[in-house]
Length: 362
Image 1 (cartoon, rainbow, N blue to C red):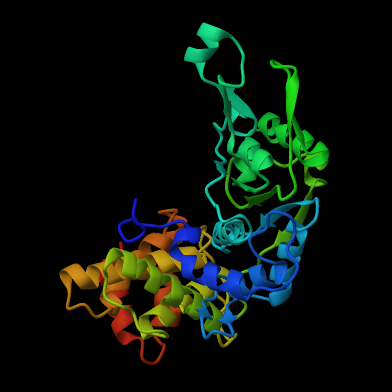
Image 2 (cartoon, rainbow, N blue to C red):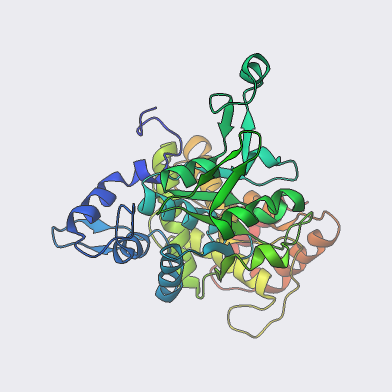
């Protein structure tokens, strides 16, 4: 599929020009089978300007030291576990790391409660298995097995949602760097360049805790929520523009008032206090993450484009905020109404936002 027609191109396709320019300018040592040096990978994630004038856009907005620790971990024999509450860009960072290091972010295991062992180890083509018995031709390698054989990065999303017995299938792979295939009396050994990036959070229900044996195989890095309003507004604005281009929605100007309002509401409700620190507020049951703020603004742009005048206004984001905040119809509705009356109603310049939210309030 063409990059121009894909709704969400893989990172290595969407940012191919940046990766190519980085590779051309990169004269630093590269670990075996890495497309870029660790310095260039960090530059790709954090952004910068290259000697030829190419501007590398930031993929992650946060402390540089976190990115340096993340990248350096992949250059060792330790696997990487990105931990954090929902919406802290764990999946986004994982994808871009794999794209920069291996040029391939598609070797992915999506963790769910029903993820089978075959997704981590290998499976079989049963038609060939029945006709010819166990053989290399009948074996279906998992993304992890392919990454081992090719010296690439494998990604495991939502590791703690995978059943514990399937999780433990990673222990031998991460410690011995080998995957036994007893049916064939052989094994697949990892070649240089192989590593695993896993993501996890412990805020959702139905989480399977990692065993101590498996946790020891990972270097755990916690991705924090954005430190300031400005930082979070910048993140939301960047992602909304990227999504808007792919969806052909009207552009939202950077630092738009409505984006700042969404971010402010989310930060105050999840923090339990207003931005000026003067008023305590109750927090709803949801996480109100940066990812949810991006979704609210993107949905508002769609409303403005198709049912408005193309300009993002308070009425376009009100329903989206309500849906993000009120997850528990009983408790969260009370929290939201109290916040509207005690904070939003009295805030200067927010009258239009208050009226829009009251119109859609249940």
